[in-house]
Image (cartoon, rainbow, N blue to C red; front, side, top):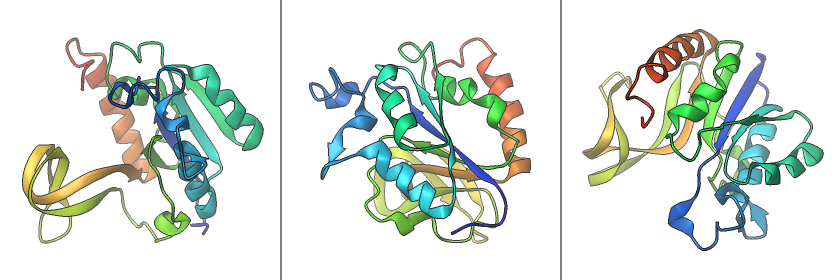
Length: 194
């Protein structure tokens, strides 16, 4: 499904994947295969199905292993995050900050397994997080929404809230604001672990 406007994507693939050791000792977590397909390839296929072909993968740990994706998928660009092993996800978005504000953009975790390529086929009229409603308590990263559907809180843990699923979408103008905020926040000492 093409939306008529150019859309791009940033896939965050720099992490060490320590919670999946020993599987990730020699293979980055996004390249671990589920049902015969690397998790990152299910994300790429889902984006391609929507018409998104301009995909920037932020790499770090065993980053050279992602080069094979450039041969397989036209439009893949690799961006190195040199501080992947000492900083959190904000450093990966910061490494790709130049891309923000140029078009509507998806920012996705690269270690998602998306078996149904239709996930992103819905029309997206505004910036959003993708989430799954959880009844009761969650210790994960979550967000709450008001009656109007707008996000009122993002944080770790909550009750009767949405678990973040690792996909967000920003309209071009919102991505430009995000770019400014990411740069300002990341360059403020002490924020490297956000």
